[in-house]
Image (cartoon, rainbow, N blue to C red; front, side, top):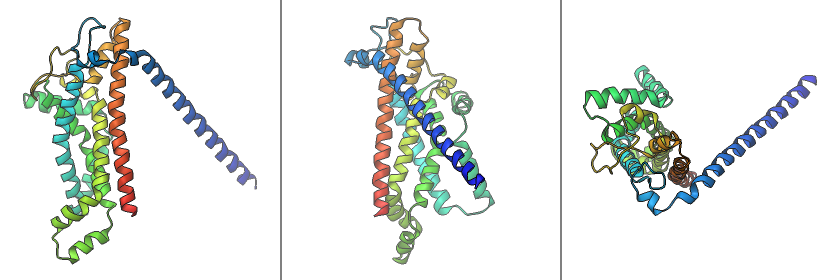
Length: 285
């Protein structure tokens, strides 16, 4: 009886502690976001979005930063999505369940948790130095593609696992080959989960700074990138540059750029949530 009472007290105490911790985290997040909104919301206008960087805070804009972010996001998606989805399909649908397959699965799962700076060092040696790409958009995209590939592979495999085996068996029973079954039946059924994983992976890539710093992304770029071999900057780098400046005007600019970056991230995550809910409804149906 005493043990039961003690366990109830511990359970209640842990529940209260969890509620307090969650509330504290939400309050701090609201305070931080509120401070950023107060500082930067009035700075956002058309000139701020379309102006080049400047030594004067009132004239500085984020044109090179958001175009660089768009370039990096697009190139990273082009590189990582086909490779990640194809690898996930192979491992789940064609890969053999043996020791080698288990070793590959474990390593892919571990790679998803490797700190991003490690990928930056790998990208520096492999793409910047060995392939002589320099601090270009292409080097940055390859590096970020390596970073998010494990996430896309894992998400693809989980989405494929969620497709009922009866769907495959019915397709095989109609005389379809394995690839026809995967292409026409399994992939459409798993598309919502795969897209969700892809968008969440790209959302992570948008906010990464450490790998891009390592490969040589610039904090100040006075021109808009026009090709994958151009030097570049991105929104996180621009924010870092402005925050390090002593003038208050640059702090306001950094707050405004953070709002833009948050909007991009929220939009991507909102799309992922919508696709996930739509896919779950389809699967349950």
